[in-house]
Length: 302
Picture 1 (tube, rainbow, N blue to C red):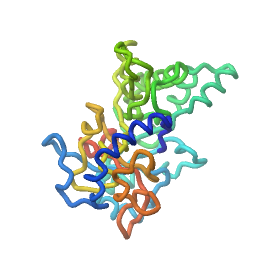
Picture 2: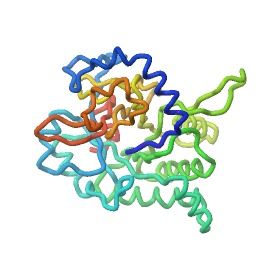
Picture 3: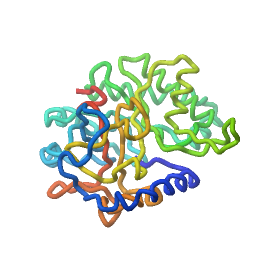
Picture 4: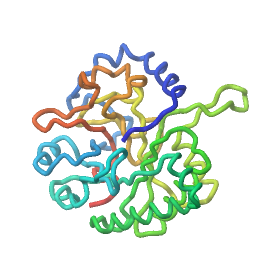
């Protein structure tokens, strides 16, 4: 997944990241068990996601590192094919849990559909119905959390909010439960009551809208790969707890992306491969995004 962040936001985060660059620069690419201490004593599990399915043969080696994997119900962002479909059973038998995810619409797509007569809410309900139907075909059990991939960060535009909340409400009225993958990075948001520049995260914005509308609860998979709070591309038996992302009560925290976003990962650049990707060790070498969660099956999709 590739989260779009405004340049001004990146600059704010980069400034904070550089302040602790010296401390993080020495961090090794692959941490030893216990090197990453979480804020709580509860166990935290490591997972991965990527647009392309890694192949059946790679699963035993990947399972040595990861408890769960992202699982696309739709074509991933920028892709014309979904190689994950039909792979739930083999992943489950290999011992993986799941983060089940469906690609959301960019604002330009929502606006274009509106000009053609399809409201953002109707578009959201249509995409939710498709995701629910695919989740059923793939064999995911009732109450599995389906995450909508909200790629654009900052406060949602009105049409984005209408689309997203129609999607989550439609899923909530199905046999499944709604979730959203969204940014936990602070973005500029005008000025506060004191006149000082304010910020907001996409997840804060969505939570406020859900509460104000008395809507169904939504689970969150937070994207926050800025260093800090992220340790960077660190594969560890003790990954960082999701609360350390700055977003409390998240179901999962994506703390590293491939390729890294240079403007916000300068402090942990040495933890990534020279090409900027976050790679798994040989022999099953893949570029991945890293996620931590308090459950080995964050979507409860087994």
